[in-house]
Structures are given as C-alpha cells and as structure tokens.
Length: 465
Ligand code: HEC
Image (tube, rainbow, N blue to C red; front, side, top):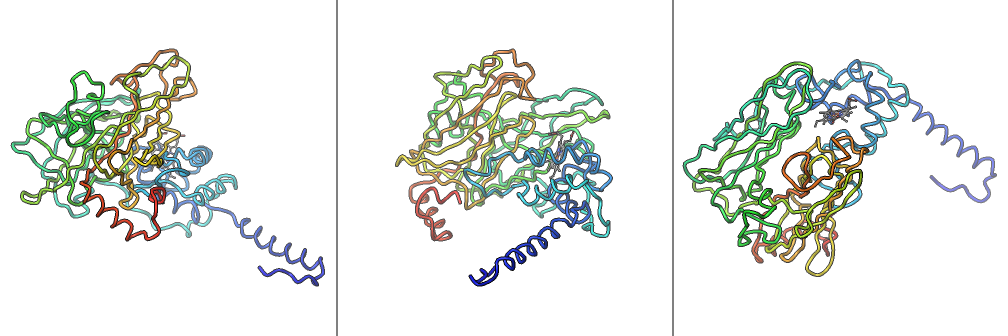
C-alpha cells in the first residue's frame, strides 16, 4: 500500500481504507464449506484413521459422515488433541519425519467452517476421493522392500462388543539360529478386522546375554554396562522397545549404516491397547522384520534408551489428588545422535520435557509435550537434519509432571497413592530415544556435514531450526 501524500484530503484516505476494508470483508464473507475447504484437510490429516476399516469411532469422509460431529471436531482440533500430535510447537526441535499435525491456517479453516454453520457447499468442489484401506498390506511391501524375512505373531485376543479397554501383553518366541541385523521393522494388526480394535501395539525385544545393549541411568552407551538385576532401570532398559505402532504409522527404516541386532534366544513381548467397537472381534498383532543381507551388516548399532525422568535416589511418590514433578539426569558417555522422542508414562502422566545440558554449560531444549495422553503413544521422529547431535559429556535432563487429580480424564482413581512400577496403575517416566554413538572423528565429520548444509549454523541453538 502506498502512503497518501500529506495533501490528500482526509476523507479520501478514509474512503480508500473503507474500500480495502470492504474488499477484505467480502473475502472472508465467502462461506467456508465442507466440499471446498474442509474435505481436503480431512483427506490429508484425518481419514487414515477416520474411515470404516480403521480405529476412530466415526468416518470423516462424506459431508453426511462429518456434519453430526462438527462441534466435537471444532473442540478437538482447536485444542490440538486431534490429530493426536501433542508436541509443543513453540519450543525445541520442530522438524519431524512423521508430523501429522494441522497448520494454524487449517485449524482456522475448520473452526470457521463450524462457526459458519458447517455448510456443505457445492459437491462439485470436492477433491477426488482418496483410496480406502481394503487389505491388510505391509506398507514396506507396497513401497518396494519385498516381503519380510521374519514375521513374529502374537496370540490373539477376543474383544467383546462392549468392554472397557484392555492392555494385552502376550509373549512370542523369536525363531533365530544366528545373530541378525535388522534394517526395517513394521507392525500391523493381524487382520483387517483387527485394525478396528488394536489402538496401538508395542513390540519389546527381550534381550539376552547382550551387555552392550544394556544402558542404565548412570551408564549409557557402549561400555556403560553393569546393570544390577535390582536396578529399577532394568525394567525399562533390559526390555527395550523394538517398535511401537499405532494406526497411521508406517514402518521404521533405520538410518543408512545403522540397525538393531537380534540374537538367538531373545523373544518379543507385546503391549497392545485394545478397544471395544460394538462388535466382537478377535485379533492380535504381528511384526515384520527385514534383515540386512549377510556381508552388508551395518557398522553402527542404534540403541533404544529410556532416559529416566525420575531420580533413582528419591524414587516416585505421588499423593492422592495432587500433581507431582520428578526429574532425571543421564550423562552421555559418547557423542550421540538422537533420532526420536517418545514420552512414556502410565495413566497419571501429564507432561514431559527433554533438555540437553552441554559440557560448556549451554542448554538446548530438545522437546516438550504439555498435554500427554496415555491413549496415544505418539513417537516424534526428528528430521535427519534436525535430530540433535550432542557431544559426549552432555547431560540429558528429563522433567516429568504427573496429574493424580480428577481433572485427568485417564485417572482411574485420584484417591490412590501412586508409586513406581510396571503396572498401568503404577507410574513411570522416561523418554524413549533411539541413539547412535559416534567416535570423535565421526562426530566432527557429521558436524561439518551439517554446517555445510546450513551455512549459518554457529552455535547449538541454531540446530533446532
Ligand atoms: C492416528 C489416527 C487419527 C487421526 C490422524 C485423527 N484421528 Fe480423530 N480420533 C481417532 C481415535 C482413535 C479417536 C477415538 C479415541 C480418542 O478420542 O482419542 C478419535 C476421536 C476423534 C474425535 C472425538 C469423537 C467423539 O467421540 O467426540 C474427533 C472430533 C476427531 N477424532 C476428529 C479428528 C479430525 C478432525 C482429525 C483430522 C484433522 C482427526 N480426528 C485425526 C484417531 C485419529
């Protein structure tokens, strides 16, 4: 806009402002409709789950499907509960490989649609429909990785039509005769029907005779062994997660040259959250494993570490009807690249923050989730160039908050004291992070590689951009 000269009579200025104001008003007055404005957003961000053969309680494909839910949609979307992506957008790393969140403009559009009467608009404006899920395919097969080398199945659970949620934890043997390096893993429900009831599914690899893979709160990384059987961290780290799956998630392909080692005699334990959907369904999970070819084994192993959010000398004690906070500190004994963040709590979990305290005293915020929801085990996978690269001696500082009041909708009983434990009604707090360690030379080379990509990077804070 050009500024009016001083000689322009005032009324002319006022008139021109009024006209541009009118034009803007006319623009926003164009009604926001389902067909033109909202359907493309639902297609991109909601329908993977909100379709007939999927987990969500209702489909969001047609106008008729969506209209009755308009108020609930506005509520869930404007509070950022849906899609289930709960990482704070104002601090920490912001680039992720699997970001399913809505942009502010998309939230505005949905809210404007509901506030404007949730109109249908002209069906001719609808985008071409997106193909629905009609078979229980492996996504990795679809993407050209070929069939899995090994498939491990869980036993199945029969969920009645009406029932409260169940956490089903069977074990499966791992049929291996020699050590193998894993390149890619994918979990899927055991059938198309099972997709409706399996809310999420975690496969833990139960380690055996493998001291290198054991990491404790005080001894992290290769060489950081010596985990006592009574150490509470053993519950977490001797049984690291192989993969977590929830509807909408694909497979985990490890970074080039890195992988996970599986040994004969190890087994898988499952942790499945199963949800009744109004019809009796029997189902379980299976994990597909794609190995590195012999002779092409990776040089680097990635370790899944549960960085503790609890100081082991103080343990955990959450009084009834109250909030509590704990924090844990873990020293990285090697240079490390952190690939993801998955906050882990049970029913009282409320918020988790992970910060790196660098050897020079600087602090770098990695991630913060302020409205943790136990129903959603979302794993936030950092973009390759945004994944925190940290020098040895860095302290990983995890802060955890718990809500044992009735304001927490997942709280089964706010009148109970809650302590540390493995049961869902006990509590624990750690940040699951996949870590790859580097020698000093490798670390310097990686740093240089990043600097070359982002010439302006001069200090650690900039890595978060
Ligand atoms: C990863 C799967 C997934 C995605 C993506 C997803 N939803 Fe959901 N949604 C669910 C599930 C499962 C539930 C039921 C459990 C819950 O409420 O958390 C749900 C619940 C809801 C509800 C509450 C229904 C009620 O009972 O009142 C609304 C509204 C909703 N979703 C809207 C959306 C919208 C709009 C989007 C896209 C912008 C979206 N969801 C994306 C899985 C998903």
